[in-house]
Image 1 (cartoon, rainbow, N blue to C red):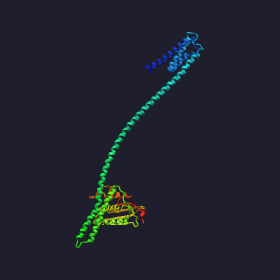
Image 2 (cartoon, rainbow, N blue to C red):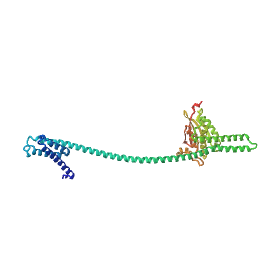
Image 3 (cartoon, rainbow, N blue to C red):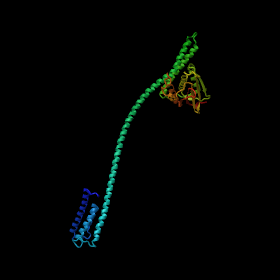
Image 4 (cartoon, helix red, strand yellow):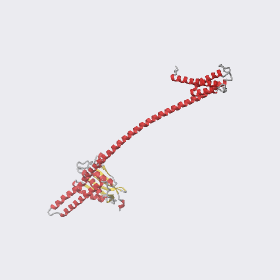
Length: 399
């Protein structure tokens, strides 16, 4: 069933029709009043009523105005007067009424449709603007929340950074103390050994002054070496630049081998060397490189202290890795190392020895890296471990 117009559409139709009636009545009144003064042949006032009704009231109001205007003109102004008969001469007037109503009504409908579409587009645009504004407001709130969270995270980061700096300073102090303890222990042990030997030589009958003098010289040498070690370690922890000079690596290896010979003999370890002849000098700090060699040899000796089923051999080799890089390796035939500990052995305070401090290899790596080289370890194919490090060659000082 067709839907019945509600109160509002019906009221609108009645209002438009009332508009047409009022305008036609006004046109008739004015035309009658001016009939004796102005010619009514053009029926200008009825045209005005039809056009106005069509423009403001639409097609229903315009059509109703056409009908009323036609009846009014036919009854009051077209012969025979006071009759609704329409002759052929008056027919164009009525056609003009209808044509004007149609044309003006079409324009009015087009205008209203355009206004409705424009209003709808404006409403849709406003809706989109409101939605976008709401999205921007939500994004802004989220951004403000993220900024607040970021500020909290930044504050927490700065606090953690300050705490880390404090812990780092404490760790550095502990590492420095452990490093000095580890490195100074060797020359002090040598001082004690030589002091005991000196007492023995002086207590003999007659006293062996020559050997006693040699023992005292060794004590002085080891004391000076201990002082130099402390100074170098302190410089290393304060990031001071190493005092790099031209160092003959083979001579350095022979010197350290001689120093460590007593320790090696006590542990029944044979120190062998395979040194490349005409090896160019290295560029580095002699005392620090000497400490690296002492640490590597000491580790090799201790790694073979429990070996009983094979010879305890320590091989020190020097060779050229590249035209400007010297490679030194220390190979032992000891107990070897677990593959998972190959990289960890260079960490500070990590040790696999019951009495170890875990600082020797860590210090050695720091020294080698400060010299622009690299220190690493690898397991041998048969027994033991090979510790190797590189040093930049001092080609300018090479003969």
